[in-house]
Image (cartoon, rainbow, N blue to C red; front, side, top):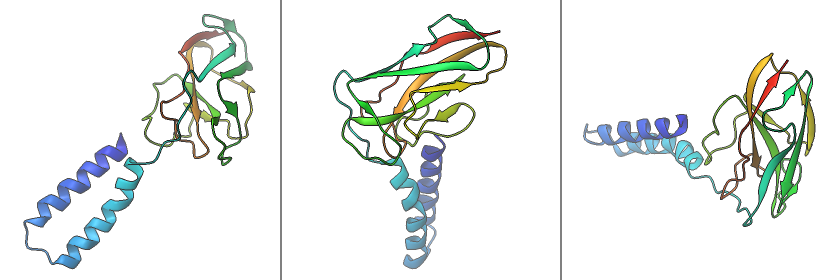
Length: 161
């Protein structure tokens, strides 16, 4: 979303300055500054096959668990590879914790809410604060960009003791 806002702001600036009598070289400099944002907004997405899906093997929706929380990722219709490995019908897991899916046209963020498993892992252990948490999986391609169509799980809710 931030990229879309940045792109819109740059476009508005360029359009408003186009009527202000700037020289062509100044307009070209502004256009070049806008190009990276436009390129990011139009990233090519890797196709995913029909029926591809990711899901939690464990924990199950509604489970009460203790730390460290063991999470096992499942996948059907595609294979798991490491980030950077550009193989057809493949990707790597991302765990979305206590937040919504990111902008599916952009690379998946990497922070406490979006945990990357670019090493190709399908099992992990994480520590979460006691209480209720929502978890969702999102598959990313070799560049951490969601596929087209995106491959993500239904959210599950767990309680950490």
